[in-house]
Amino acid sequence: MLQKIAIPPLSLLPLSLGLALGAAMPARAETGQAEWAQSYDAAARLTVSRSTTPILSEATVSATEQAIERYREIVNNGGWPQVPAQQVRLGSNGPAVSALRRRLIVSGDIGPETGTSPVFDSYVEAAVRRFQARHGIIETGVVNQQTLTALNVSAETRLRQLETNLVRLRSFSHDLGNRYVTANIPAAQVETVESGQVVSHHIAGVGKIDRQSPVMQTKAYQVNFNPFWTVPASVIRKDLIPKMQADPNYLHDNHIRVYNKEGQELQPEQINWRSLDAMNYKFRQDIGGDFNSLGVVRIDIANPYGVYMHDTPAKGVFGDDYRFVSSGCIRLQNVRDYVAFLLRETPGWDRDAIDRAIASGERLDVKINPAVPVYWVYVTAWGTPDGVTQFREDIYQRDGLTASRAEPADYSQMPVTQAAAPQATPAPRGLRSEPLLPRDEEN
Image 1 (cartoon, rainbow, N blue to C red):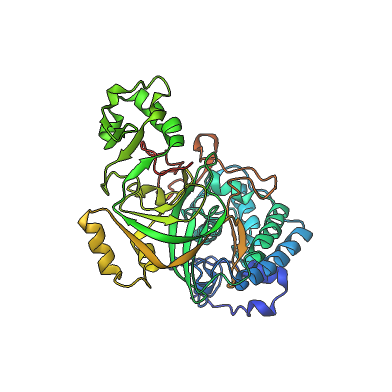
Image 2: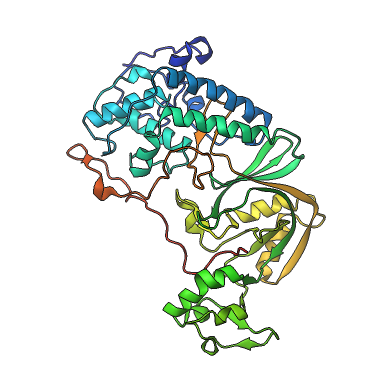
């Protein structure tokens, strides 16, 4: 029978030890597999959970300042070791696992009392999951290429990243309104906020590296139910013309119609697709939630960039690590909950009315009254009041640091160390390819 060890409150420990112990111990303890005496009585407070504290808040500023102090101490103590380029997982055994343990101890993702055993056990798996959660990586518990890249960003770079983003966070420390929306572009996440608390979280798809979502402060003023999608000039040039050259049935298959300047519908074969002739016409996709690029809802936000927020029929992107896939607009998971938040104070538009409007299939525009403030921000590092420090990839290279952008997983170049009979793990995830149809518009 294992004896429980009482761990003192983190506030009573030296900072360096408290940081290490402030890591997530395994949230899923494997019965009978403990290798060292421990207590999971407080495991819930050591896991990474969705915060109800808005990312744009005084509390986040304060938590980020505290995170900076912790990371300064890590840097002053020499940082953390590099992890060898090996794909390790539950059951792996070797020096790479020992190096991984040492790395996770320094960053506080696993307690120092676990030691530096070369065995990748359930405790290491839980620590890797915690690390992945803090870095916006799907929590597989496997050290794949994306996880390895994040592990080997230096402590000094992470400290500078926190310092850079503290400036951004402080710029939003003023009153943002009682009800507002924040879209954090590097995290590809949207949150709705009311009375200082996060009401809902929404995974998002945001702009590609070459078609970036803009940083801005604006307002959501209208909801379009069952919208038409008008293809903008840039998407005609960059996407539609090449796709028609490759497949003459592309417009028909995707329910896209062509109109001349007089509003008369043309047939695709009337256009010379080997030239820029298509730039002289308008293209509109029919209404339809299963194929329309905007899904069933579009949210208009005042801005000079021609971008907006919307639903999408391509829901699979929300399950990917890499969600930089749009032409600048933001696609939303659980868009009906998001619309319900926006229309909560608009008379006659409760959730049932929203569902009926969508089910009708009819084109309908509804003014948001009052309009809701919307903030599109670029924050790649921040602290939360529960002591967790979050990092995201500097996808648009705006932090001014030297950390390279993570690439898709390439397991063919990573040696694998594992036990004779390792647990089955899901197939590695690479980047999701861009859907055949351009999903939103830009100028």
